[in-house]
Image 1 (tube, helix red, strand yellow):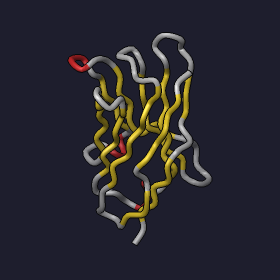
Image 2: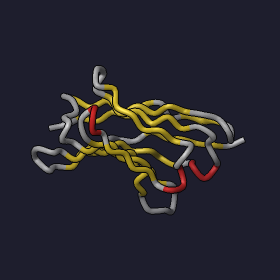
Image 3: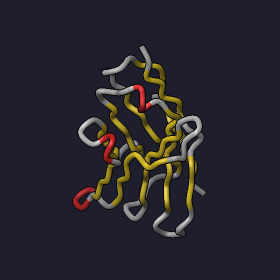
Length: 120
């Protein structure tokens, strides 16, 4: 069983930055795939960024709308997946969820989400 806890959301003005963190317990394996999803009111949940693989062969994907503004990374010591969000736009407003697909069991795990609001 994996537990995911997100943190770092909040209210920020357009052009501002936030750093989201997803803590996984008991930890993240190199075979796991971890993603950040977001869901805005009235919209479907969409994948924002995905990271998988060991340190030397990490694979990363982003949705086109955040390329060049968001950066996903893994902290191997803290067992966290971080999402650095820069140049935030009002359309980035959503609840952001951490998702882990186990490379061992193929099970899916979701966190409770953290709210990000971009508004002046």
